[in-house]
Image (cartoon, rainbow, N blue to C red):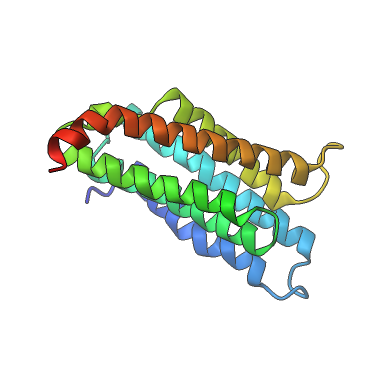
Length: 190
């Protein structure tokens, strides 16, 4: 495991998950609900920024590695899954929508791993639909975490709408990836 700045940022993102979740389990006399929401939102946004930044740094500094390429999406999926589970528990996100998003992430991660083993990973490279899905969910989650009006906007309504859109895009992108991988699945699945 190469110890470099991009990988350390990825590890930091993973270590932020207990902090992020922990804000919602602190006694209300330590932090009121609005402060808990704000703190968790800030941590989630910081994690999302480090996701972009660690990839940029890895390319800029020539510090890309197989381990970093493995760990980065794991960190992303752990943070998103933790956020969705918390949002379901807080009754700010629908359990079915969250299950669709988390289930797709697990399915596509497994598909990508299998495709890499058979030397066909290019067939399941990130698509534009997948990028739209990620954008929708990465905007929806902070809005749902914040859970208060922002600049006159109902963050719960907009976040819920974007999360629903992310679920639709999730199913669409999963179908797209499975269709792209189907010839390899049929050829190697015996």
